Amino acid sequence: MVSAEIWPTLDYSRVPYRLYHDPEIYEAEQQRIFRGPVWSFLGLEAEIPNPGDFRASVIGETPIVFNRDENGAIRAFVNRCAHRGALVRREIAGNAREHICLYHQWCYGLDGSLKAIPFRRGIRGKGGLDPSFDMGRHGLQPVTVGNINGVLFGTLSAQAEPLEDYLGRPILAQLRRLFDRPVRILGYHRQRIRGNWKLYAENTRDNYHASLLHEFLVTFGLDRSTQKGGVTMDGRHRHNITWAEAESEADAALAREAYSAARVRNNYLTLQEPDLVAFRPERGDRISLAVTSVFPSGVFVQIANSLATRQIRPRGVDECEIFQTILGYADDPPEMTLHRLRQANLVGPAGLVSMEDGEAVEVAHRASRPDPDATTIIELGGGGIISDRDYRVTDVPLRGFWSYYAELLGIEPEGAVR
Amino acid sequence: MTPDRFALCELYAQYGALLDAAQYEQWLALFAAVCSYHIMPRENYESGLPAALVFCDSRAMLEDRIRALCEANKFNIHSDRHLIGLPRLVAREAAAVLVEAPFALYQTDQEGETRLFATGLYRDRIAAADGELKFRDKLVLLDSFAVPSLLATPL
Image 1 (cartoon, chains in turn blue, red):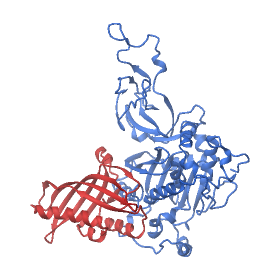
Image 2: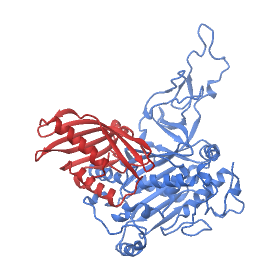
Image 3: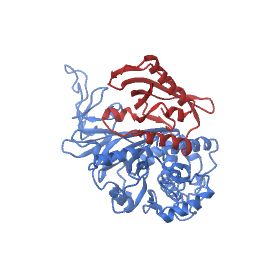
Image 4: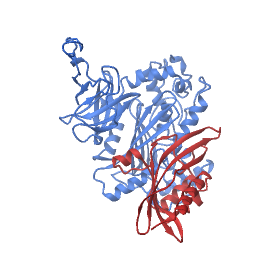
């Protein structure tokens, strides 16, 4: 395992490539981060509206099922039979009165308790379990569930702080802004990226890359770094909101000058269907882009009127899945739903804005592997103390991510600057 | 409408060949003046959920997609190889036919490594215009909806 000496700098401005590639570190992450005192984004209350509705999810690589019980309460468990460790609920979603393991038909209630075991007393008094076997102690391992306006989080640790404290004020406010009315699930996007999950977690916190990698944003005038925007973190800098306001005329003039030095087309090509990028303000603010990253693996996305949640699902040290849920609001008129379905073209594996992230993560993963002691540079917006910025050419929230990562893994250097 | 079966097969052969040659402007010419093109994950389709991976409900949007692909988007450097199965006539309408055809798409990277990128089913409405068959509505039902890496070039 690595130690605190791994960090070349105290402000997390240099990250050794080893952290993306070492299988031992990956296992430590599963234990100390995902099974540790964090709250992981699980899914949405809107996915399980009725008693008995269930849905599969993950915390790290641990399979989870969340459901609504007979009384309407939301429960979540590790989706693993107490008997032999098999996946109990094999379907991704459905409605059921109980969860029955196919292997030996051990049966669990919607509260996760072990309800029945076939041949528990054996047959004709022979076989079966010893009468002392305590069914009450062998339910599905519970996951503590927290709920912010229908956004469900789960933790496997008894040491986790209360969810509201974990998220912090700006993140709570952003979730309450995006989920200010009941949502409607429009569908799912899934993407398998051949890269370590943390490369994607960093990507979502990186305001600097947005208008450089994603040329569509600039070329078609949807978003430029000259617009008003910035990065806002929780008090401990583990989460982040990358945000921008809709472009003003002054921003547009500045953009023509600023991008002359970058090899990005900035000639304001127009779309035949401008609805694709048209932002229709939905509430009393001008925020047209807000990407909210919740440590370790939750992402909440607003790009114009396209709304989505993302769950980063690690799949070993070399791969992750991006599981994206496309949303509208339950009270959207049909015309607004159509607008959102059109703007879903911007996100996901085929997203006009987001497709490049898959490639960026893969090329970073590929080239960094052979040299574990070499490091990245995280210094846009300067090093030193980690703090919010009211400008966009910055990657300072990545240092926030690594500072909490180091704390959880127990490799925080002495005198760390956070 | 009763299409000529050879002409139908030719349309699908052209479709795959033009995509594999990255001749996207010529590929667009296989679509009617009024058309739609959607790539839909099977998962969504079977659950009755409307979100698509690519949602072009007009020719304008499809042309925007191709323009963005050619002028703005960056993606994994690769070549495509479509294997399109025999088209099956599903239903006849007054001025169109409904046709299904299965497909597989392999992608090859710069090192010569080929991987299966996608399998799925085309569900198309095809109409004749000026004596030529054109795609009116194309629904690409994506079996392999866990998209490997990213989806840039059309299916």
